Image 1 (cartoon, rainbow, N blue to C red):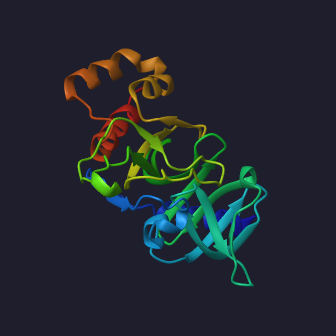
Image 2 (cartoon, rainbow, N blue to C red):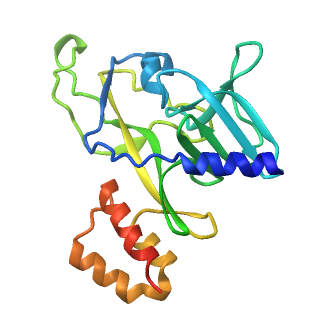
Length: 236
């Protein structure tokens, strides 16, 4: 138990406080490729290589392994003794995962969330994901015209470890996106939107609403969210 407590203290002490870029990284995948191998390996993972990770379970047990977060399928993966790449099992029993200076928590609905900052009893977290843009219009001889027909966005990952097939004609544009979450005093995540915020701070609804109107908070910007949580965490 002492070891488990030390791991938690260590992990929470090294949470980064970096601001994220608001410009998504676009990945172009040529048409006719119907599997994840079409996407460069570096774009499928959070980190350029597997890193030493510590998995802390609710029982207090700690496991170590080389880990990496697969952005494409929303899985936390590790390399076993046989050098196979596998997904972590028994996710509901995981309390947190420390990879280098980053800390992840798991929620059955939202998956793996990376904690980016702490604000008293509350935390800000993000989830990396990949979305698709509607494929380019085709020109003569099934060649892409390069003019994007951007209509709707959708998650590329199904969220259960499988990947939707790419469209068979035309290029497919993918981009990495960060979705932010507030984690309340009970370690439950809420989407970083106005409704989620007012759910957490319902007793201070008037003060929070006034702040939002005054500061014109952009819920897509990490710095705005950090400032917002700082304010809300100090409310009586």
